[in-house]
View 1: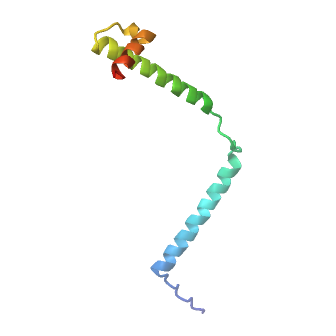
View 2: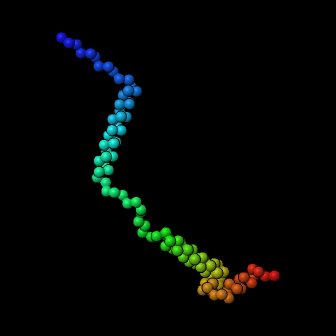
Length: 101
């Protein structure tokens, strides 16, 4: 009768290497199947709002906020008519007060 050789026990390091190798192989298989199922990606992202339009919207919002802030400051805090902020004479009077010599 032939005697079987006893199985050689693996060290912890050898077991870890074998597990890592098996995990890498499974990852490759999963990546390969996903690659086959996935349609080609678009190179360029399609933007809903173009960058140039975003800049224009931002500048318009800044102008509106500035005018609204001036109206609140002049009308509510200053006690005047908020619509007077839009008149040239009001700004000329303010500049005369600031640049008074």
